Amino acid sequence: MSFLEVLDAKGWYFLTTLLGGWPETVTVALGALIFALIFGLLVALMRISRWRALRYPAIAYLEIFRGTPALVQLFVIYFGFPDIGFEPSPFQAAIVGLGLNGAAYLSEVYRAGIESIHRGQMEAALSLGMTPARALQYIVLPQAIRTMLPPITNFAIILLKDTALVFAIGVVEIMALARNLVTETLQSAAVYLIAGGIYLCVTIPMARLAAGLERQRQAWH
Amino acid sequence: MSKQKGGGPLLRIADLHKSFGALEVLCGISMDVARGEKVSIIGPSGSGKTTLLRCINYLEKPTSGHIYIEGNLVGEKKINGRFVHLSDRELAKERQEIGFVFQRFNLFPHLTALGNVTVAPQRVLGLSREEADERGRRMLEKVGLAHKIDEYPERLSGGQQQRVAIARVLAMQPKLMLFDEATSALDPELIGEVLRVMRQLAEEGRTMVIVTHEIQFAGEVSDRVIFMDQGRIVEQGKPRDVLFKPEESRTREFLKHIQER
Image 1 (cartoon, rainbow over the protein chains, first blue to last red):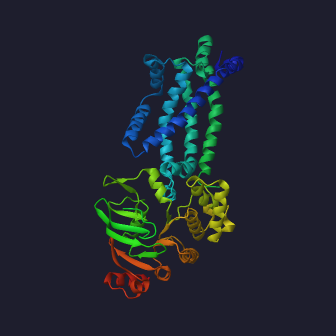
Image 2 (image 1 turned 120 degrees about the vertical axis):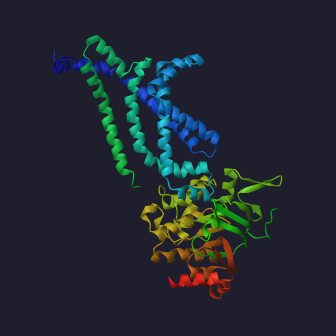
Image 3 (image 1 turned 135 degrees about the vertical axis):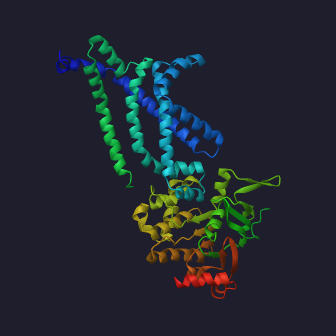
């Protein structure tokens, strides 16, 4: 059978089977996104802190998680954590692993966003009697978010694609189902093509959203 | 130093030095400002006027020397005879009393005119939304911008932006107002409206320290004019003395230079 004949004959079956992994893919992606959004902010705030005791651990964290493959991090968490008394489920390990990895990336996005706000904004807020923390909360971050939204959206796209790694620690998501299908049918090209198409259906609209945000971000209102 | 309410000066600057690396910008400034007094500081650019003003509310940390408001140290405290920097929270509390008007306005672009004026009363003083709004409206009315309450800064002219910035400071009811070349970033035709507001504040008896290049304005509203050059106070006194019959040759040169512009 030619490639097109395979698609024609089995395409629908492949698609519906692979879509069975969609909830798992989305759960891991969303869980890791939320984890990274929160933890990344914490790392960014530590990174710009005046105190070395906060700054240095943040830098170390950043270098380690940016400088090692996500797959390595997933393996270390999934297979390493039981040694220190946690037994994460594949799901938990996937969310924490991709979340920690993403936090390193996002912390740099946050930092760049915060530093893009003119120093005069912080000074004006301080001169009105705000503490640096309040100034960040009410004056700097609300402005920085505009700058940060496009790269955050791009990050979400990367994250969604990176969930394709977590089958390696046993999460049954789209890629895991694709591998099963290939074993079952030996039609690698067709199966992976359809899997790729599923990711594209989500990532293309997200990329358009990022581009739209990018265009808007100069104007305030 | 003990707390002195009625008696001493509102602001005391004692032997203030500030260096940026090897460059000494302030070389021992000492001055007092009485309650209700209007002091203008003039001098060539690079003379340290702006740095002096920024030291008063601790946007710059002095290299040495001390600042007192009503006899209380600003930015530091004395523990067992040693000077220690204040925590963020303590410093913020002190800055509430010192209003600062910036050359470049530094309005918050994500907030409306009213939002700019109310954010600190709400978040710092803990006023309710209604109280803060009411106060904000009054302050914007005072600077002649009642009709611009809901505009965002980018839709306002420079003069209007600076007036919002002044209203924002007024809303905190500071004891002392610092103006850092408040009209220098404005087009000539917009300077008047800002000076009018500043004159009105002066007439209300507020304590103001004004760094300015507007010599005529300084002469009209100030109780005292200080001429600074190269990080030092060269000459000070009544406006008519300093501006019209200066004793120091450097002051004369500067004034001549300004008039020739």
